[in-house]
Length: 239
Image 1 (cartoon, rainbow, N blue to C red):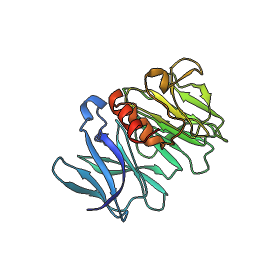
Image 2 (spheres, rainbow, N blue to C red; image 1 turned 180 degrees about the vertical axis):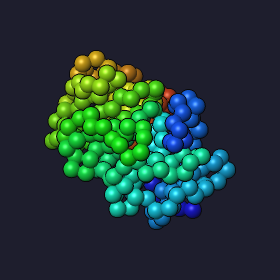
Image 3 (cartoon, rainbow, N blue to C red; image 1 turned 90 degrees about the vertical axis):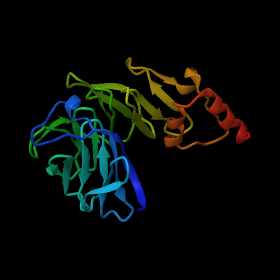
Image 4 (cartoon, rainbow, N blue to C red; image 1 turned 90 degrees about the horizontal axis):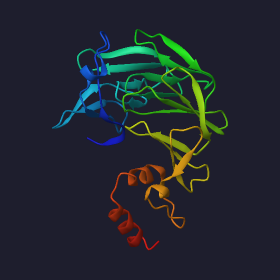
């Protein structure tokens, strides 16, 4: 079966009718959308199994698998024991963290958090251009401001704090660490977790090559590789 977009890795799924704690719900797996967009499929360890029909986009994280319908007018969450459950209307973007689901409305003028029941969502923020989240046992959510000039963090206390300027793209890993690609895409930075300070990856013994452009998804992958491989890559590309 051809697969065009795999958005969810190491996904933890949970029963949504009676919501267990994340520790009780975890069942790591990978889900994907088929190349024609007509089936949502799940890897069971041996083969891909169909778990849903047509979908628009998949979102995954430590808390749930989330999918929009093809018209982006509804959003659903999936659980192994209960199947699909409608949890709200469509949106421009969704993010799943370890213990929550967040959404940016279609007009991108408000950020919401699913209220853990039915189709009710609570507004937690105003306008944003994009939202980002990750795992690691927290609800940390990041949002870029309209115009993509600032990045803000929504923390456990329910408040927003500015953590830096804008960028081309951001990503959050399983340790709740934020990474950002600069606006002109010439460097990747790591947020230090203090104020608006960031540290370039080259300061953490990772090389940044100014003579060669590497896409964000590949450069972030390099963060977890050994120094030897990075040097070998550079030499093989004659940088």
